[in-house]
Structures are given as structure tokens and as C-alpha cells.
Image (cartoon, rainbow over all chains, first blue to last red; front, side):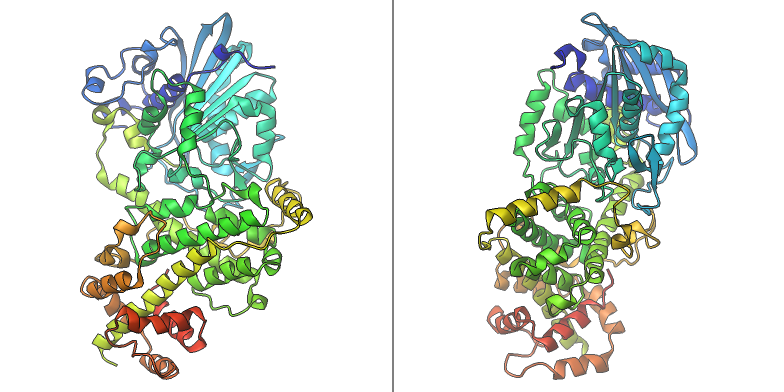
Length: 437
Length: 188
């Protein structure tokens, strides 16, 4: 049974909500955000009121819903959430009627780098924790969800009485929205999930269990192909609707073209990508056709980085690009088409976890490819017999060593600027580029 | 060996490693594998499905032990980089941005010319390597190289470097050891 179209948010509505949820952070509206929660009146102004007004007309984006069909929606509550022990305004609940059905939006925002340090590349195994019957999710996201759940408790009846619940978020907000969606779905609600630049939330089957609960057609995942936040953490973490063939896996060409930029994670850029008035989800899906979906995603990201700080980072990015092209090409010819779409680091995690060195032993070209990768990682291996898990780990560590300084540099570059840009560049998302789990 | 000779060796070793690796991968990326039997292709596809359909109970974490991101070696994203250098990176110094993003492999002559042109820009990095190299071990490694091709410690044209590249691609053990010794002077 297909869901009536009026039970979905449009791309414009969803992207505006993911964007204006940042205004729940105290003083975001002034460009000088501080720890705390914004007043309800100010949040209402930004969500359903005049928004940025003249400032937006000067070049920024006004993501108030006032001019959309949700202009008459009611802002019910602004709620708090905690990241790394810091409690701030974290989102809002909005209710409206559409085509005779009661609908609720739960909007969650990302977090600011200066309010809680990014930790997505900390121990990814130790960071796993259980989430209901769904399985394992990242501890940091779970902790934030728990704090948000407390804030949402007062709206529980309103949410449970709604015919449709829309969960929307960008970056960490997307991760929390995912858990909020799964939570209410497990309680029997009809939930739609919309994420922008969302990191990987679950691992080892949790993402599949959440997909099953929500229904894949109710999960709208929008990403830019060179948005670094969407690439962590690596396998066995995975995205909801993460496979290339997933209809609602809407990966778009990054706005910065050939250069990696934190702007690719910027919510303003997502608004620009999908927030056009005439855009519908089918049109967004069509935009995804322009992306080259291959296993070189990470390599292309590295290759295009304008922020690479070191010799290996830069030269390895070039070499890594060629490595991934070759690895992807060979695996596809060997029939491993299902793993297309994973990043380079994912693939080598797969090699390790699945003992794919045995497969390499069956094919000389694949073996040569891995041997060359080992050499690139400065491990001298002369024959297949020496190709052990230890060597693959060395390759992976070399790849991580390339990944990490770029991610650090991307965050520090934004942090160094120290310039609150919301009013000039279109709202919270100009700073949201610094956001990461 | 003096500093000038080491600079040539540094540039040539890195060029052999990086250019050789790119060329090897570019070749593999266009290689056609002998067609597998349909049954084998189906089996591999099933294996791939299994790799992606995991469950926590059966996943073997021991395989990922020793990978920094999954264990004690993991570092916070906001930690300081392990090492840093002033000045441009190697490829920035080589100014090969026009080739970045494309599929075409750069010409060896072009790559080498830019490497030589980048000597001044890379002076800090070369100085670091020169200061830390074990010169006796380096001399021994040079002595183990095959006679014939022009010395790696002097200026080389692409034609002169080509025989060394061929040896590197053939995994000549002495050349392999020398190149790795030079590359390891700069940490990851």
C-alpha cells in the first residue's frame, strides 16, 4: 500500500526544518551562540515567523516555514538535549494538520564543535551500545537520544496521538532523529525520517532492523558525496538506506565541485541542493544520478581535499584514488557487486573481517592489488604467503592515518575562523559545517 | 654522500614509490579478469551479501583488533596531528593540481620535472630526512643497487629514471629496500 503524498514532508520543508532547528541553540540567531536554550518566541520567529527577514534577502537563506504549506503549523515545544555532558537547546516539536490527518514534526539539530568535541574516530568498537531490540548503535548518539527523550516526554501524548510523525535532522541531529524515529516506530507510530549529512548510526544489523521497523520508503537520506561526516564510522557501521540501489538513498554531487570543503556538510548547502520550491523527492532522486557511485568515494574525497596538511596525506590521496579504482574494478569483476558503494576504508575492513585474503589467493590480480597496497603502506611483502591479516591491518592503519588529519584539519579550519556567519550566509548552517557527532 | 646527493635520492625514491604505485593501480583498474563460472560469480555475490548482513552475535571482532580506529590506538578527532612540517606538501610543491581529479596518469617526465623543480620548496622536509637518516645503512643500501643505470643520487632525466622504475616495478629487493628506507624517514 502506498503512502499518500500528503503524509510526507517535501524536500523544501524537510531541509528548512533541519536548518532552522539550529535556532533552538541560545543566541544562534545573533551569530554568537552560547550554551543554553533559545527562547520559545525567538524559535517560533525562526521556524514559522519572519525568520531572518531582511538579512536573508541580503544573501542568506530564510528557512522559516512561513511561506510553505507548514506556515500555519504550531510550535509546541522547544526541548533540550545533551552532548558530551553539555545541555543546550536541541530541537522542537511542531504540529499541523494536513489533508485531515494530525501530523507532528520532531526536529533535532547537530552540535557545535566548541560545545562538545568530535569523537567519531575514537574507539568505534567500545563506543557501541545496545538500542532496544534494534541492536548496536554508537554510544554518543544513544546518549544524546536519551537526553532528548527526556525532553520529549512532555509531548509524548501529542506525538502518540498523531497520525504521522516526521523526524528531521542534520549531522548529529540526523543521527538522533534516526533513533527518535526508531523509538516511536517501535511503539507503533507511522514515522517518516529525513536526514541530511547524517553519520552512520548503527552497526551489525541495527541499521537493517531500523529499516524494517520504519519501512525503507519512509526513510529519506540526503547526502553530498564529498561530505566527510557521512563516511564515519567505517564498516561494520552502516547507513539506513545505504545501498546504492536504495531508492531513498539520495547522494548528490557536492557543491564544492572538485574540492573537499566542510561546506559539503553545511546545512545551508543542503538547503540549496534540495530546498527549491519546485523540488520533489523524485527530482532529488534524479539529481543523484549525477554521482559516480563507486568504491572510490573516500579516495575521491581525499583527492579533492584542499586542506591536506602533509606529504602522505596529499600523495597518499592520489595513490589511494588509484588503489580504490583498481580494487573496485577487480571486485566487481569477481562478482562482489553488492559491496559497491562502500568507501575504501570500509572495503579493507571487509577484507579483514571476512578473511577476503582467501579470495585474493584465488585471483592473481586481486592479490597483486593488495600486495601493492601493502607496499604503499610501507610494508614490504614479497609473496602471497606473507599477506596476513597483520598486513591488511597495516594498510588500514595507513588509510586511517590519511583520514584522520584531514578530518581534524577540516574541523580546525572552521574552528579557527571563529566567525559566526549565520546572518550573513544564511543561518545556522553556515556554522553547522563544524558539526560532527 | 652529501646533502645535494641526498636531495636527488629523496626525490627519486618518492617518485618511484608514488608514480610506480599509481601506474600499477592504473594498470589493474583496466585489467580484465578471466571470466568466472556463473556458479562462482553467484557464490561470490552471496559472500558479499553475507559480508553486509551482519549480526552482532557472529561478528568476529578479533579480525579488527590492531586496527587503530577499533581499539586502544584510537585517537580523538580533535587530537593534534602526530607530526607537521612547514611549507607546502610534496604534491603542492610539484603543483600537479591540474591532474588531480582526472583519471589520466601523469607522464613520468612531467612528474619528475616537477619533483626536481620542487627541491627548494621541499627543503624543510628533505632536511628532516637528511638529519634522521642512518647514513651507513643508506650507503650500504646504495651499494647493493645494481650497476648500470645512472645513479639515483644525481640529476636524472625521465629516460634515465625509467630503468629504475622498471626495476622497482619488478620488485628488485635492493631498490625496494632503499625506497622504503627513504620513505620511512617521514612518518605517517
